[in-house]
Length: 110
Ligand SMILES: [Fe+2]
Image (cartoon, rainbow, N blue to C red; front, top):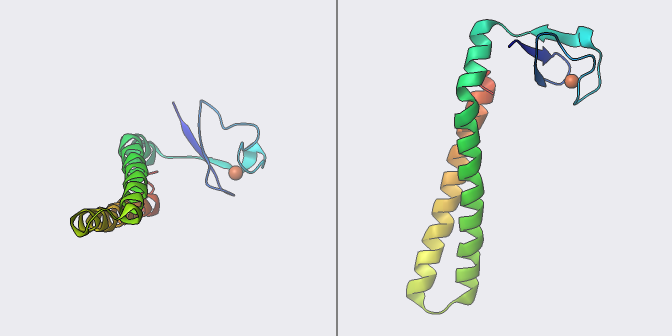
């Protein structure tokens, strides 16, 4: 299967031919260029990893939400300390996964 990239918005389509219109920005077929086999392999290879990073980001957001509730609940200093640590780790993990995704985008692995 070939991959085609919209030169206007960056949308990547899959198929034997480019789509008649870009589903994202609406430009016509002639604005699509075929992605080389080497670059297509990078996109396919990184697809699962990118999805896993996005799952991590969602989990970090959930962890941040739990931590905020725990801090607000404020049962005792020990509990608050754990929730504050969870909040800090959630932020760090989310930012690390986002940085990795940004790196993938910059390298065409997206
Ligand atoms: Fe487009």
